[in-house]
Length: 119
Image 1 (cartoon, helix red, strand yellow):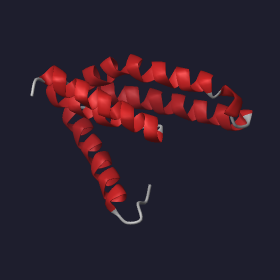
Image 2 (spheres, rainbow, N blue to C red; image 1 turned 45 degrees about the vertical axis):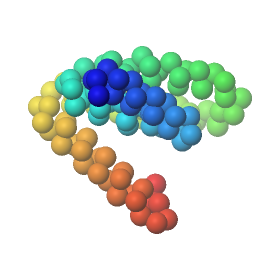
Image 3 (cartoon, rainbow, N blue to C red; image 1 turned 90 degrees about the vertical axis):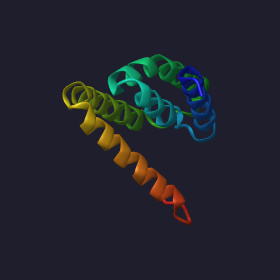
Image 4 (cartoon, rainbow, N blue to C red; image 1 turned 30 degrees about the vertical axis):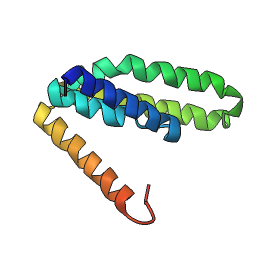
């Protein structure tokens, strides 16, 4: 299969997963891109198509927003994670990043394979 077609398929399947569960597009598309390109490139390329649907969902469901304290804590935690993750992504050797990503995916598969699933 052509590389671009495989990446497009990962984006499409990730979009379906995101629509069904609220998460999924980066979980599928970034590792597939990282198989052919390096991890920082894959993360950077995915940033815009990941941000746009999140902004749309935030706007569409703004009336369902929980209390402000929760949203602020969630946003601050997300920002801290993005800063630390960016620093690690930029400074760790790519082998370490790939092993860490593989460990996270293996754990996700293990949890989802159990019955009942432990998510």
